[in-house]
Amino acid sequence: MSEERFPFMDKVEEIKEIIKECSNEILQKKKYQHAMVNRWTTVIIDKILAELNQKKYKFKYVVTSMIIQKGNTGMHSSTSCYWDNSLDGNCSYRWENENMYCITSVYGLAY
Image (cartoon, rainbow, N blue to C red; front, side):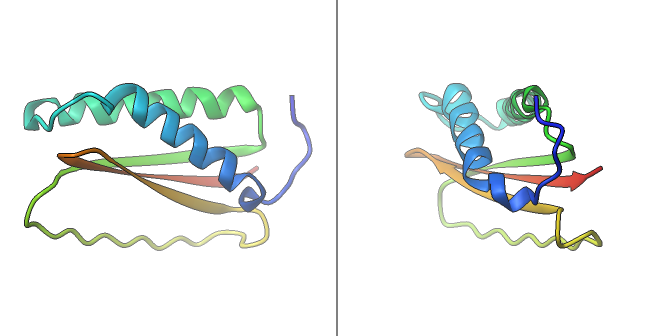
């Protein structure tokens, strides 16, 4: 259990690995199905939050995930935050297989 405070960015590689593992577990052998995207993203987010909460780090989390079918399409997204740059942070991870991308972001807000 971790009670110390530290910058979110100190844990970015560990968090990216959690995102990767959760994404692989849910999506690895799947083909894109529009009707399943909401379910898949919900399960991925729930699994990531459960893993992060087990770490007992002193952060509140926001997790977003989107699944996009591969093809001749574009996607643009932006985010702005007002936070403590010395402790708070975010990271994103792009997972993909032969027919879809899953882009997941985790925001950590120190408390």
